[in-house]
Image (cartoon, rainbow, N blue to C red; front, side, top):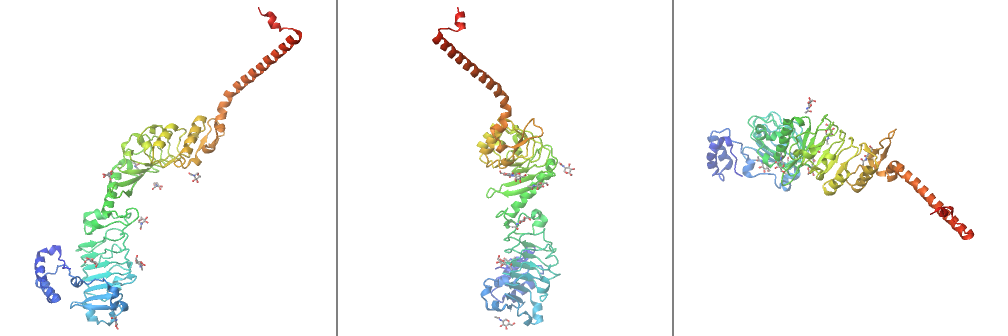
Length: 488
Ligand SMILES: *[C@@H]1O[C@H](CO)[C@@H](O)[C@H](O)[C@H]1NC(C)=O
Ligand SMILES: *[C@@H]1O[C@H](CO)[C@@H](O)[C@H](O)[C@H]1NC(C)=O
Ligand SMILES: *[C@@H]1O[C@H](CO)[C@@H](O)[C@H](O)[C@H]1NC(C)=O
Ligand SMILES: *[C@@H]1O[C@H](CO)[C@@H](O)[C@H](O)[C@H]1NC(C)=O
Ligand SMILES: *[C@@H]1O[C@H](CO)[C@@H](O)[C@H](O)[C@H]1NC(C)=O
Ligand SMILES: *[C@@H]1O[C@H](CO)[C@@H](O)[C@H](O)[C@H]1NC(C)=O
Ligand SMILES: *[C@@H]1O[C@H](CO)[C@@H](O)[C@H](O)[C@H]1NC(C)=O
Ligand SMILES: *[C@@H]1O[C@H](CO)[C@@H](O)[C@H](O)[C@H]1NC(C)=O
């Protein structure tokens, strides 16, 4: 692997490259001489391990790994520990003090304590930890003046405090890729001359706040921020910057529209491939008398529960609501939904919740048409309204509730109120029968008809018996009825 040269010092890079032409010869001595002869102090530290391509790969198979031993390399003191640091006390102190490059493979086992674990190495310049099961740093790094590069990969590290690296004054590079990091509480606090932070390939939870990545001064230090991928359930496989961009845009939109100032605006999904964000706006319980006149584009869900809304006309004629598929309007003052009839929204909604409003009637046939033609309709909640127990309406309403029982899922709780009854009489709509609601109205109409029928039947009987009587007397006595005599 070729040594890296600080970008700030790119003017000396060619000299270094020339030096490196002689790499096969006396590598360490020569490189040191090269760097020294250039009189450069600001060259990014060149790790001996990178030159040797020493990594932890295959460390488990090495003989030292079984014992958990360390081995020293190189004139300048590089130390490689496989699975432990058991033989460290055997190394004489002056030699320990010269060590500059430390690589730990498969160690530490659980936690890393930068204070005690690094104390034996006062001149350490590069720290590499790989294949460790460490989950955290038990303390922040102490005041250190030589450590320039920290590379921790393939560990169980899941948490880093903002101040962890703050006091490592010479620190330039921190590479935390391939760990188990989930969240950061904010941008890391880093020493003044810090250059590069790598954070990709961790199971980041993008539901958490990483908006600082978009702020140039704070975010640019994360050199691989374009490669960071989310791993949480909500944003799995989306780029973190994409997610944060949408979050920031949405926040701005909600803050700049007066109507939405007190609402909560969240993103609940990003459609794969197309990367269209979907938003939820929650304006519940804000004493709204009207529906907000503006809703961010790509909002699909709106909560307006517990307000004082009367009019839902915006659902029909405000284009911002055209693609709002789920709308919650529980506990408002809505008296009618007639305005929705025949509109685009009514035939495309997915969820409409109108519990606890003031609905007495609704256009039953329009509702039937809308639900019939709307394959997306999933939930329509209508309980908690003072529906009227009138014969024709309630019978049709009941029919609809049964026909679409998969959608009107709170039908069991829908009750109606009898109009002129006192005390107030309520009935469950589903359990009503035609006789329950229709009799009181139809009875008075039927009664006189029945009377008339009875009278007519009686008269027919009378006439028939008179006929029989007359016939009998005529046959036996030859007497014709009195009326026949009178006929002209
Ligand atoms: C580990 O180090 C100890 C001394 O500290 C030594 O006796 C032992 O042989 C070493 N084992 C291996 C496998 O290097
Ligand atoms: C850190 O270590 C990993 C794994 O060995 C390596 O791929 C990466 O390049 C190193 N990072 C830096 C900044 O050297
Ligand atoms: C570290 O992570 C690996 C893989 O997820 C897991 O099997 C192991 O139990 C973890 N170790 C500790 C100490 O948490
Ligand atoms: C991500 O963060 C959110 C919000 O704090 C939390 O509810 C969720 O459980 C987290 N998910 C994972 C996978 O950690
Ligand atoms: C938002 O809330 C504040 C404080 O409760 C209130 O003064 C303001 O009028 C509200 N704005 C809207 C649009 O409701
Ligand atoms: C919407 O906001 C209200 C009031 O702030 C809250 O009680 C409710 O839980 C929120 N609903 C959702 C789905 O977030
Ligand atoms: C809304 O979605 C469209 C695609 O349907 C997309 O082009 C647009 O950028 C999105 N708008 C916002 C504000 O996210
Ligand atoms: C019906 O109302 C009861 C009591 O308020 C409630 O517990 C239940 O969840 C409701 N059922 C439906 C399907 O809404």
